Image 1 (tube, rainbow, N blue to C red):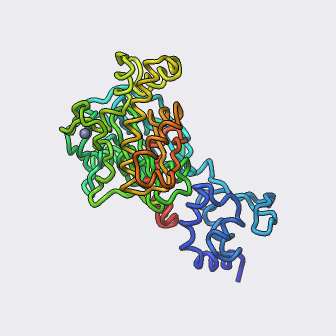
Image 2: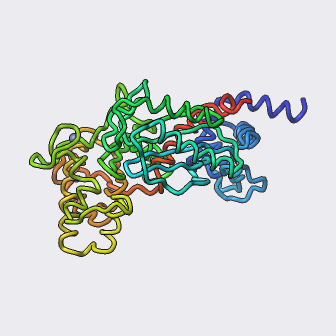
Image 3: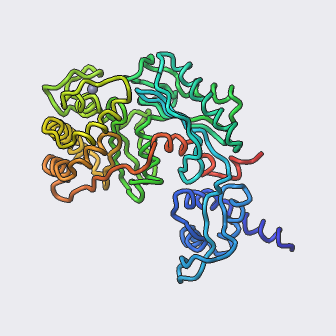
Length: 404
Ligand SMILES: [Zn+2]
């Protein structure tokens, strides 16, 4: 039996391990072949064959000179890393203030991105056509193989239809078939691979769970306000909890101020209208301008006037409302970690003690144990999450997904 046939025989045994092995390298949990061997629970020979096959597929790199003392017995081991010349996916994000396209490699690495566009018209087909066109331009410039596409939208996405049910802060019609339109535009642009669509905060939570502040959490709750409105997501044992038809975790419509502002949903005083950037600027007595996004205006205000008494009061008001919403979620969901994104991350950083105290005082379980509340750590986490869903078929079965 020649060497190649031996490797093939080992790989047959290890084929089922290719996906899990790739996910371990992708999420940084297997930095060496020794760790990979231990994590997979296979023999060193099988782990070696699996790593070699992933390298042959152009997905990872195996450092040929063992140098890292990271083996179980402290022995030197071959370092593993994602191949930074390997395939990419196209990621796109639409939000209330514009849209952005990027190419994302394994490891959640943004390889290339174009400047954000600042207009989102009322026609989803036009917007999705534009964002795919920008992405196609990035692909031409990068010259990398594209293996799929993912889109993040600021709306609940109904399953299995893939429709944007409540794009409240866009002028899009409710129920727009965004997944179908996106897939059609991706195909028309000659971009290879399947196309996926999801809610922006769901995708952000997935990205943070794999690469950021949510790593290692079993019941991860993510709450965020990017541009307008408030979204939530729950990642259970590594999988997004999306409910029976994709609509779970609409945390934006929890009532946090019964006498508050009218909400787009028909209710009053929802988190959505009481704890987003517009609510913050209004509470601080500022007239929002059109020059930059509401999130950026809020960040600028915190940075330049964070000690101004009016701004300080606005911070406290928003923290108290957000904390009230989080306390209710803690009682219902019993998460082991909460991560906050967008303006909520800035609010946490502005006064972590106040937010943690509100959650602890107002929740049953918060008082007894204390749930860690952390800031999201990834730049563009919704974009990285859109890429995660596009990578998923390859993470599930690399050989099948990349077969010519
Ligand atoms: Zn509402």
